[in-house]
Image 1 (cartoon, one colour):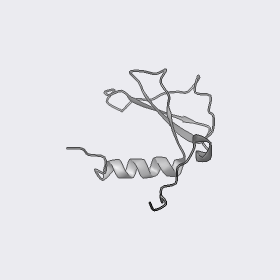
Image 2 (spheres, rainbow, N blue to C red; image 1 turned 90 degrees about the vertical axis):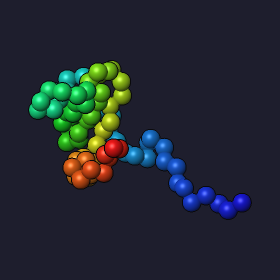
Image 3 (spheres, one colour; image 1 turned 90 degrees about the horizontal axis):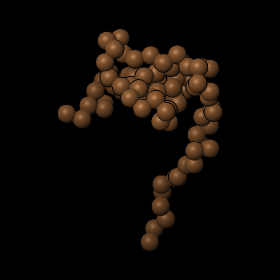
Length: 80
């Protein structure tokens, strides 16, 4: 069997900061609909499910956030 070319990364190798989100100013969409909320904390962008605010948040660097937003605008995540 050939060796796998897939590299597995542990969470530690992602080098994401352990941010204190307890006092974050969470924002919803401008229309106030939907469950996705974001907060800008210590130069990073945190995203969470507003319907379940105690669940884990995703943490993005500014470059990752930009790529995510541009991809969303271009329909990259459109499942229809």
